[in-house]
Image (cartoon, rainbow over all chains, first blue to last red; front, side, top):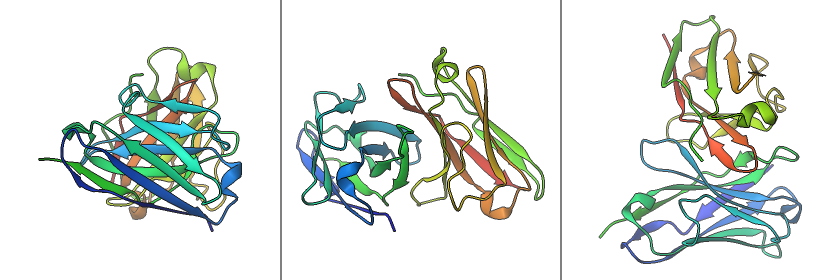
Length: 119
Length: 108
């Protein structure tokens, strides 16, 4: 079965950096685009980024463009999100999700990892 | 891109049908069929309920159905059950990605 397990969240000071990871299993990772979506406490879903199956194409939401970088290692079945210059408003649960074939949108989601930006 | 507009809350009694709307800001939804719906129970990850406007993934109850008219997509839950109480989000791809504002469904 499809499994996505995020890790790397925690408490980080404003202005610092953090990298979260997503380990995938149960499907052929290298064949799928992958997404990052976040959810601030008590708020709705906010789209972050997507990377094509081979890493050649990326898309970022305007809110994180230039600060966040999505990447993947298909040999390790792992997706990453490098977050720089973090702000208190970046505090959220960060979910990775698999791209639904032909839909351009997520189908399977991980359980998320909480990132808290606070001094 | 601005979030898609959903009603903040919808409620119904067990056995009833409810419909959640998802309205775009321009012609985004009307021009594309890439609309998905997600169910999220408290402290859980979102779960895909409908993709490409009206396709129901394997394992999702046939009480859930999706449709689109003009720039508004809709999710209908028929035969409402207590376990349907959750937050629901639409999402669309129109060259950019955006989610809806979310709807809390309450089963009375």
